[in-house]
Length: 497
Image (cartoon, rainbow, N blue to C red):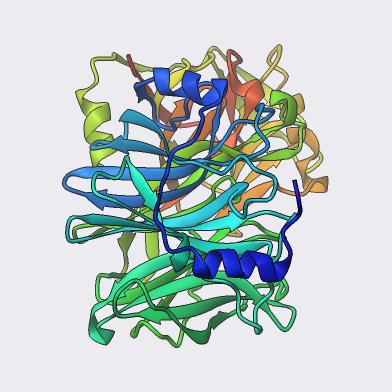
């Protein structure tokens, strides 16, 4: 097959007048995926594939979570078709499988699909998404498709948006379309680069057909100005505008900024994240007057705690509530909590099986050890932390807490919760894998959603902290405090059936 030149590609995109039904010859992996019609989980994925960047939309009582489906080692040249999961309660999901396919042709701009957004206008759904192919130029462009039922889509190649001269053709992706009422126009935010900096560009339209480049909307204010600001979203919530994005490096955090007007100026709050680095590519979505963020918890290479962090994993969603200053708190979604309460699984009190002394490089600890947690359920904990803080260690072997490598540390003096993937006895010499900022008082209140190798901590009804811990499964765990502190903990576990 002949490689397309830049001029040929531009001509093909701009002159194509016909609309194209979005279907493809499905590979064996997609056919297997389609056989799974429902899944019940806190953090869903479909067997045989993984959830990449979610594109959430709420409509008529349902969350519609479009996402990039990651197969890993599939038989096609193309990757990351857009799939759809829908749910009313964020626990029982319907799998609609592939809805917008890639084009399995080495010369097609749509060989790889990237993130976008879905918006419903009247009875018509509009998808704006990324096309990526390193064999053509520009490498990335923005595509448009429409649907009447969100399942069957028609592509409109004549609506393709190519990067302008001010933007880098290799980085022009992740379109987010939003109606801005006070401006009476649609805005499209696009992740791109300008003058060596990661920026978010803005385009505007009155009709979702003709788009005008309005220049840089948001310049990089992170610790790495050259980092791409991926998967942006813009929403109006609780009297303020919120802009979110994920820094591609080095922290890989889903961040947000706050403004009184849709165009800014943007304020970076003291706590500017929804979660730690255990959640990536989070995008905001409104349900009526409530706000949510959906992202993914990455897997690790070889299903090993020591493996490299993968792209894609399991879907995770938090509800967001606003404080008086506009600060956002991450909490369990009301819908998910109702599904947990309605589940028939039993709730039991957890008692420690042993208390041991744990020697560490930073001081002696007193540790209470508890039996292995079930595969899926909710750990509710109320723990007194009188002095420095506490550590929750997972994957404990032979009551040797100091050697446990998976440690969630609550540090009162710094007002942080850390996740360390290193032995508890020497974590003072290690770097944390992720962390969140949250003031800690004399007691910490936790709800921890457990699902196989994942644990998402909801802390004091203010912060969420997502982790992946493979060695947690089928192993005892512990709570440790400074040796001079007594361990006073009320623990319950509800197993989901």
